[in-house]
Image (cartoon, rainbow, N blue to C red; front, top):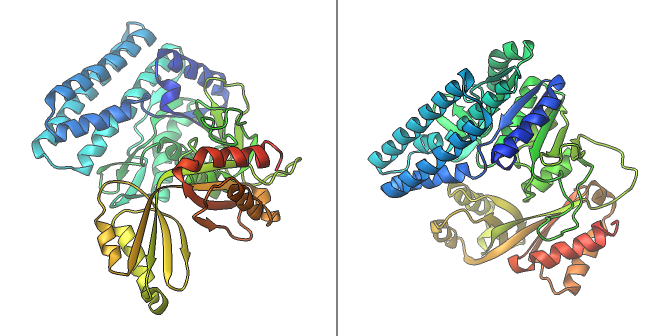
Length: 456
């Protein structure tokens, strides 16, 4: 058995959905469980609708709902001929559109943000796409069944932090999926969606369908988890900067985790962990070129050709905060209090350095609420430097090459690129550093040309 997850770009229109159905049909002997995102762009559209409802913008809501209905009904008419299957799917879509209108009316009525209503609205896209795809598979003569993932994907929510309850997910997956799997059915279910222990609607976060696939793969002990997108696997660099970036045939789990965490756009950062825990390989594939091998992510492997650096990832929209105070020297609790403030305000920290009287941290900018800066100022002199980027240079071979860090520093220095902060451990497979956003292209081009394309 395998998991096959397809993102929104892979099923964005009729042609794409037909292509994905063909990919699934060719692999039905492997008994795939199919996890789908919403159609490309639909989740953003639902977020706009929710915001419009909060702001009482009825005309925009009507326009957005009409466009959403027309898009899905057009695909239904193109994919499924008139008959019983068409009627079933048509009824389901209409029911979901009515539910969406009811949810948006509720948002308009209360006029304040409700996480339960928000999650219900933005999760509707996966319900529509999966029911449409399952109906199309049956119209092609395949034995398929649509299942709701929400009772299976049980999570605990603490503020914005979502924690999947792995034992409960495994139990529910077996209860709800085993019967259909034993009967050889193709199961079609949703990514992204979840439910709290007390039954409230939740999600796994943007791009969380990868995470769904990995969690279900771990729960069902599958042979392989496949993540299908519109790129040929994990690349050696961002292809918008490096046109000749190449897909990597193999990666270790640790390499893939580092790249995903620091901004590689192919995988959700949390995807690898459930697969790693159970030793399940993850394969990243291109739905436009399904016969290409993609990238296989495994616990470990022996390379025939040593290359210290595999890939470069970067995360933009970073702010560097530096607090200077003698309190940092005299009171270790001050550091604990600083991180407590950042946590309470939902600020994700990527790197930390400390001297006797200075503490520097990098955080992701995630909103316009800067009240936390006033809280930090009471510890000492605060310097705020926005528009920074975290760059991570990744490769298992870096463990055996301690001089590589100095080579990168020297290379960037000679190019006039200023490094603000560096983080690396002796046995770590990555080097992380901070630069100005404007220096991203030159930094990526230099490292890729000299240390990846050049053989490292």
